[in-house]
Length: 261
Image (cartoon, rainbow, N blue to C red; front, side, top):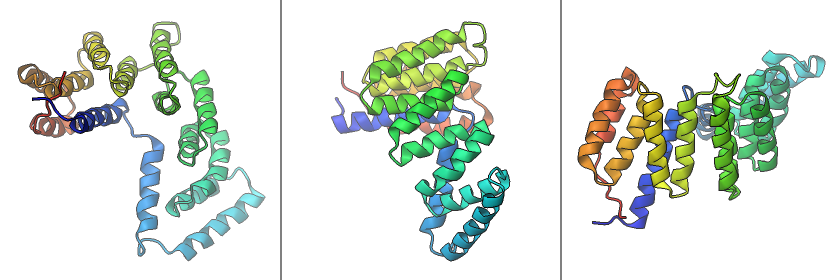
């Protein structure tokens, strides 16, 4: 029986989300910090706004004397996130990114959140020019290109990154993560066959990595191919770190979603 279009896209979105979460060893910096700030600002008893603003003023006074004081910059950044003030986050974050490149991706993600797409794209491109292996920047840039309708450019960018992995200096590129990102893009473009092909390539090139095995299992389960998907789920459970095993078991046991041809 064919699934409705709504169920189809609910399923595809769940697969895309899963692959996004599995792409990185750490979640993107912005997600963690923004969620922390949002929960604090939405909870009336969690933080006193007057106290937060007083603390912010103290940090700003320090920065007037010592503009590169990283402790004060980080303190001000933390307060602005807790206040949910993303525009106010930008100045200390820009300064921090000049002092510590680790903050550059967070700056791009923040600009993306406030609608400065052009600024975010520029930062992501600059990061990747210096550090092609930065998967967070690659993910951020491809997401923005897809939002602009530039799916071909997004695919070319990821494919070129895969080509660089085989060149001198490309050893730091996590090929499997980049392959998963490319498959995610194909899924968003409704090119499921291409995504499955990439999962199979990733499984051959890195047979000890559970992520492409799990991704293929989920897609096949959605297609109603129960026997094949069950074998892959069991394989991914064996390969996965202990942290992920129970979650994979839950995925295997969820109700089927039949996807029509």
